[in-house]
Image 1 (cartoon, protein in one colour):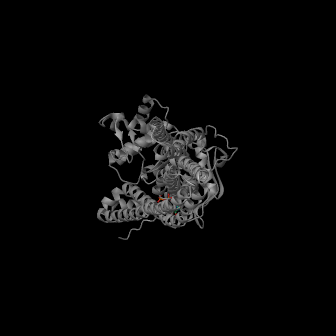
Image 2: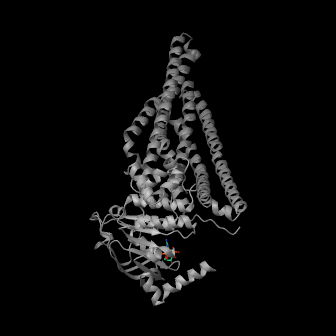
Length: 599
Ligand SMILES: Nc1ncnc2c1ncn2[C@@H]1O[C@H](COP(=O)(O)OP(=O)(O)OP(=O)(O)O)[C@@H](O)[C@H]1O
């Protein structure tokens, strides 16, 4: 299959640890500081202390009660010790339950904050940001990468604090109980460290690969679902399936590898712990024989040492998780650090209610360096005028409207509305006064009423209906199964092309902007709908400055001014009759269209 999907931003990260990034990430835990401290305290007091106390109780039981040299009259004491142990176990269970509930809660809240902050930021970014990235990869960062941090920000932090404290506690107790034996046992720690760190590096890379493969699946799925119509229309389902299956298989393979590497840690820990126990028993026996150690203390040692490996193992896993999470954090912060190219000036003022006088003053613009889309454009449009922008594909029509809405900033020259440079006003106040009707009307999931109201959320039902009536959309809406309350879906597939156009006209009319931009649909529709749309358009354009990226002859003919563009330059302007008479580009375009229609 020739199609190649590339998700360039998903690369294996093998960088050294970025402490700054980590501090930045942990900043998100700040609002929940007191909750974290509470959980750590509960776990330390009731979880860790009970764990440390249990071996002491066992050792005491052996030396004070079970040791035959001490007689057998201490059953009451033994029951007391066992009761104490039972209480410790219960407290421990409760502390674990408390910790799990609360760490999950903290984790969820942090993830919520992080995801909201990221979405808010991404929403503020300029068109140029989205030009460069497939929607799928943005989606993956807001979902997968944020999710990848959940474990770290919940159990990760709390468990690490507890594990470190527990380790220190055990080491101190062992050293106090029998320093020589303690040092002998700990000889195994560096051994474990060396073996596991090389294994851990491989495991970390393997888990990163898993994450990347899963991200690719998500990115691909997003594209595949969005492009499903094209896939089906070109009967590419089989090829698409093969591609997907390969990705899926490769994801499983990477998961199997990572998980088998992960499973090697268990045996490594077991072997080290066995060596530790061997040292403990050999050297311990020697010390007992030399009367430097009691059997009870040896049992305490054995229990403590068995509790020693678990936190070490968890801390190692935590370190790997930290490294993997940091690669997600880096991806998230890369977006967070992306500045909107079209930014409001700090002293930007709201644009007052405008008349609709639009001026392009020697505007030069290009989307990419070295490829100008507009080359020194001058236009002066009086309030209320209807301007038709015509020209070959790629001539710069949409670019003009993109600059008017300030989706991009000019490289040279100015765009002025009522004498104010669009860069001097707040983006909200500018765009509120400009209504846009896109060629492919985006219908959001919801009812027809909600979709029309998108233009002005505060509009009443009566106003929504009035707008729909004015643009002749009311008739088709009331004929839908639930009238204005009919649910429509994301791509508006339940509605025809013409109906979607009328819906978008109603939306724009309700918003009542002073300046209207209309990207006229190119698809041909039946004559009755065409007439209805033309009538609706008349209502919509009335009294506003309008820019129409025009394709229909009827629209172009009625425009007050026709601007003919060619390769980013205005080659002609005037009304229909003037331009026809002059016999230039425009006449050529119109005659070509006639020839096409009559062919
Ligand atoms: N987002 C973008 N990134 C890079 N180049 C772009 C982008 N949008 C448009 N261009 C380029 O800018 C030039 C002008 O494009 P523009 O969309 O303004 O043309 P148009 O006249 O509206 O075309 P059409 O009638 O096909 O919509 C073209 O060469 C196009 O390839």
